[in-house]
Length: 193
Image (cartoon, rainbow, N blue to C red; front, side, top):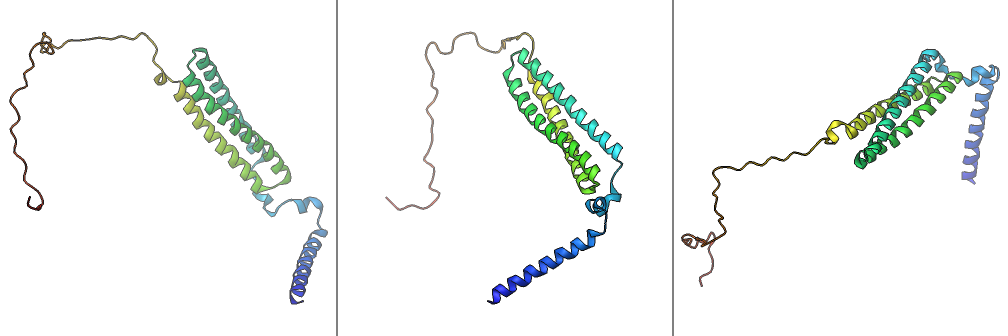
């Protein structure tokens, strides 16, 4: 019985608290209720959206450049390069999709006046751009000049003049003097034999 009363008391307090919160916002216009208190800390909307579009454009250019390098690697049939580049391109596509969705969400966050959501989406775009820049460098390493050798193979052989001309494997093999050695002394005492 006591547990039931305690539960009812907690539920009643929760309802009173919710009702007090609703009463506090009842006199405000709906737009004011939807906007958070930190609306004054929003960055410049036009500048932030242009920076986001520019970042996404840079990422798309990096992806397109990487896809051209992949096509070039396919053309020369270097499948190690193709596999290396394809792995990076797959990750770049995922990051670009995340950044593009964050750009759209950024526009919505400005419409809502949500400063935290604006900052969150700007951070997502910034991190995606940094990772794509890294992947673009890795693509360059995959298909760079260091990854392949082009040209004719040249082999040069030189014979040292100090090497004897006869075949050492023919004829009598001299073994030399037999090894003279003594049994080494015991390092630890052993039982007499």
